[in-house]
Length: 272
Ligand SMILES: [Zn+2]
Image (cartoon, rainbow, N blue to C red; front, side, top):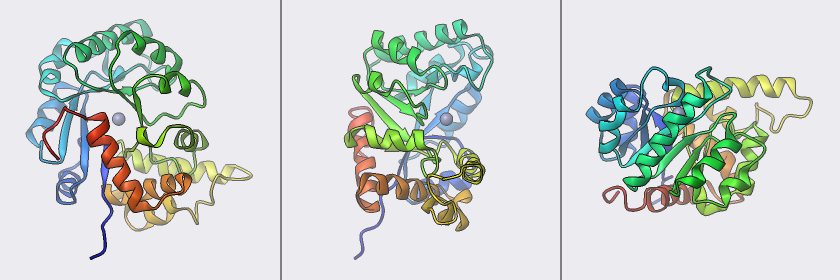
């Protein structure tokens, strides 16, 4: 019998009922993130064998939702996040973001729970801050050209986002991070769609694109319904990542699931 591809998604959001069903049916181990109390309620109500809830105050909502409103949910989760700081896509004052972030890091440490980090524009700052809270971290969709080594010297995993087929900074993370610290993510199908559209634009404007979008795995698989399927989106991302790593797609699938379940999540979930 032909061996099938093994899927895992290190970071996603709640998505549609259909998407959640697909994840359960295809056995896609997925860390499903809730950033507000309403989302947390929903994530817990549809928690399944392969859908693992993660909760935390996202930096975009640090002003709206203090840590108190999420604390109870965070106590019930095996993983905290996504939490972090962002100076690119939001205007919440950074001192307030940092305060909420630090309190969540401190809670995660005291409860011995690994943390998913959002680092946009604050990569250097966050690498410094987390040193004060020794823990296991997952840096989600890292797309910065610098400071990677400041994370690599700590216990950090990296989940590769769906723009890896055209974004050189993301492809570089694949090249530089040791293979036992690499994971893949969708960040939800909306993010996959966004990444794909940005890729089409970037490749049109570049004199020499990273890859020809017409020929890349990302583009081809999109045509077959990437937008509607977590498995198709993950396959497209894994195609590019495995090509950079020089391993087969199936090997990549096994490796990323192993790194997620027995690496980042180690000791935090029931047997998967
Ligand atoms: Zn996210």
